[in-house]
Length: 148
Image (cartoon, rainbow, N blue to C red; front, side):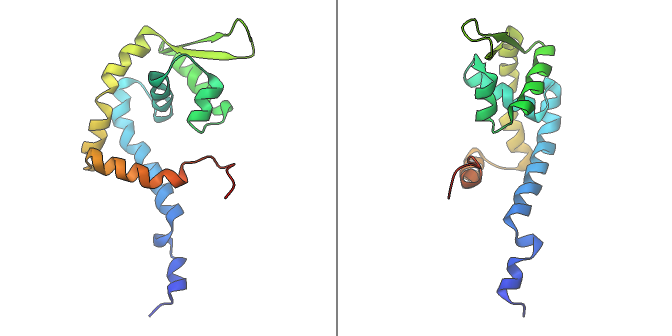
């Protein structure tokens, strides 16, 4: 019989491994659902943030999505090239870049309404099961700069 402390170091018992593997698989599950919308998973996250509230600054979007601004900027530029968002400098503060939805970006929201149901069907989960899993992950979703 193995020592329980040894069991704690088994790869299959590692929370970090389960979360990393799940994250990679989630992106793979979303890919074929988002492809017809012309979005990658990170672009989908940006669009979700904008569908909730727009216009928003690039910094606000990056903070909400826990992205580095240097990661969010190319995503927004690609969305702009697709005609889904527009970037404008604020008149009162030219250092600030506001991101707003175009009519096409707003219209895409209607098509995106089917995404959550398609994902739940692919993984065989109900709305309540997805919500429970999401809520269970909340302690791992916070800001890293938070002190324990």
